[in-house]
Length: 323
Image 1: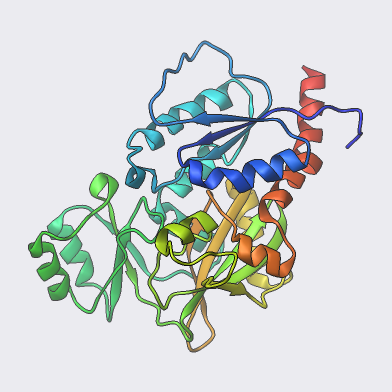
Image 2 (image 1 turned 30 degrees about the vertical axis):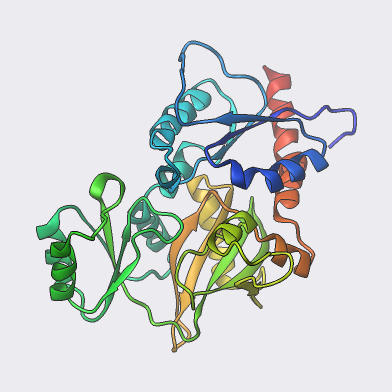
């Protein structure tokens, strides 16, 4: 990109301020001006044109757990508004709908030839138990609009699920849409997360599951989960993975993202004892571990900012120049 071209403002749609500092630092380090747009409550005039620049969607499916119950629905309308006015949106409407539905993720993954655990969506007690009875072996439940490992519980049988439902402790999540999914017994107690920006593999990391499945890699999340452990001093549950960019699974992820309009994602898989890899989650609102980044020499948010600068801005300049 020519040095004479001024950089556009990056408007960040967000609901969780704790995730902002690394992103803002990365963008500002590459010369961008950042405008933070909080979405929970708001006023939207469809006839009013949005501001020029790049719009980045950072609304999370777990927003309701932070009291931001209006964020997802408001974001849907804002993204539609932005796109109808021709604004450049990173992880826009198409990507957002995948972010909000594990069921849609599973469909897309399988259609792109990527192995997934058997996955069923059910709403209502009777249908949950009907679905559970079709699993041959253990299965897990999770929220269809998930995040942070929400709603993940392991059951050995439909009867065990029935007892849990009758206890009153079961939380079906937003919209009461529950995913039942084949339980894959991992060969080792970790999952692998692959970080991709555009068509570029950044890195892969292994996330330990020994303390559960709340595996947000953000340092802010780690501090909240274990406030007595400083992520800079150690105690991280994340470590580098030997996975490389030329791995066939990584290449399949890149093709899926290009086809489905997802520009930024952390995609997770688990490997069983036979070496078969099952992909089960696409995280569009991806965060990066600062501890791991220092260890491997990759600042994820800085790399994202460079992607905007080198790949998105030139296209934006061409479009605006032709207008």
